[in-house]
Length: 112
Length: 116
Image (cartoon, rainbow over all chains, first blue to last red; front, side, top):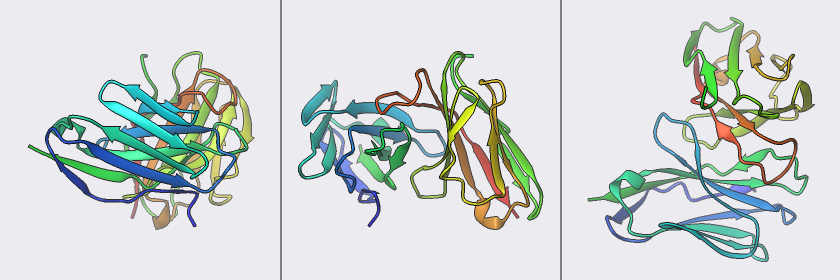
């Protein structure tokens, strides 16, 4: 079992729809969770961080964390073609050393 | 500079050749990480520096990989006797503070290494 798992997709949604991206992790002691966006050929860019159970909203983005289920998700409202990218879930494990453990990423395609 | 920079951006090496990849972190950033990203995969941790001290090198895949940050700023990742499986994008990231789970890591553009 991989430490951080994501469905590789592609996930295809129409413009204006809600895109839902999911991630599970295996280290129950993990404390910090991040969502990065990576455009093709570019480096990862942080879009959300979440540390506590529940929802965290930032503009069109909402991160959701459920530590009991070891599950973190990212919702993108009013999806735009410019949101088309690979979304990487990253976790800092229980050792809390700061090193990020990434999932393989989910490719999102937003169709006009 | 405003962000993390890496050089070269692209490197083609013949199998068996040694390569050196450079990372210039954001000025004043204490933490520096190296990650390896294979095609279609998420980045994988290689090593971590806090200032000049290499505190974690557990992700280095073999003793052909060596990293240093002698003055606590610029870092170099060296790969000796490159193999085809070393072909990947090598990402450097820096963070303002020391070890810690909530520190934001800022990624450089990466060096794309192709070993023929």
